[in-house]
Length: 278
Length: 301
Image 1 (cartoon, rainbow over the protein chains, first blue to last red):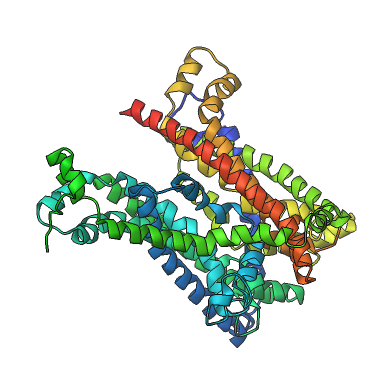
Image 2 (cartoon, rainbow over the protein chains, first blue to last red):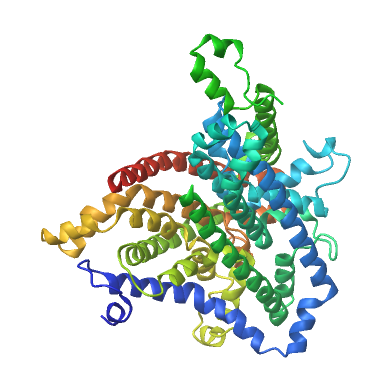
């Protein structure tokens, strides 16, 4: 009864508010909030200089550079090709379109470890794709990039696709009647409409890539300073029983994730407003 | 540049005005073909080839090796543990998803947006960190480590830890599918049921649940796929004890690191098959949910 009296803005005839919200809050606290707070509390037991040393040693900094660089590049590639894939799926007809549309979600459904070993095999020097490439992919930073592209594919496609479906064709007709070329119509009419969704998809793919572990560790080669991602470093520290060091790096990653979450939320609000306005 | 694209002969042969208007909002055939080609090349390189490779590598050494890799005791116990973890975590998150969606979609209360953000939180946490936080709480040096050891209980490097990590990473799936649909459906039907004398549970079973059943199934399918495939979080809390705390993805890693590639891909092919079944079910259910959302949209207009 306390919850409904304290929180409800208006009385409702529907039952179950206290039970439902009470259970949801209890569950979210036990599963998510209390364990997450453990990470922050653990770092409070460290001195500031110990914390700083743990998160800024050269090996850790090298892992940030790789993780952020590869994630950004993978999300950028996904933004470009995700837009093309979404466009093609919405606007054109071609054989097996529905099957291909359904398979875009494969990275959501395929376990990351499976994706990891498959990508490693085909991008290895003697692999199906690797043998045709002039440079090494598996066991180099490029491999990290390839794995992060794989896991990011659905994000841009699935955020842009519904917006493209809703684009009012009359706007394009109007642009054409006013003398715009097809490219001008795309750049000045369609792109501004899908831009918020495109950025949201980019940010989602980027955020997902930062934390990715399973698909990357098989293909990366995991050489310290060269192809070692930050999540792997957390596990390495844990295996050496350096709990404080592992947690310090984890807290840095968590804070970055939370900031990204806020950015994504405001992007989505922007996207909704933009869509509502058109 | 010629801005109003001239009708192609077959378009001109069709109805005059309509054909011209149509062609003004489509691209030249070569652009169309180029874009389709680029999209397919990208998806082939990054999605389709890896998928085919899993099955190809799994059967490379023949059916016997494949079968042997799947029925050997360690693989069987990994499969059993994976099924167990999913069988516990999916229903837990289902119950949570329904309660959270009921409170959020049907009532107006303070702090609702905060709660919505919190529900999404596990998606933005790295799986490795998801494992780490449970080590900090239940591990030997953790908050409850001493107490657990005194009572001879094990969470980390044991099955409960694996279940907890799985619950964490699959936490938002059901809630996320239900909340938007239930918000769109509004409260009128439930209110009508109450006015007509239905009890709370009658209203829930006969009105609310049938209204959201497809979205619910959709959330469960996604939740299950992730639960069975989770690697990073489970890897941290598992301890990798063969035959005891290895799930299928972890078993794949061990086989792969021992250079038993055919066996690793054989077990991987089972998970890839699960992924394909998931996508198939997802497609079917998605069509239903879309239909339902459209129906809701029509009614509210």
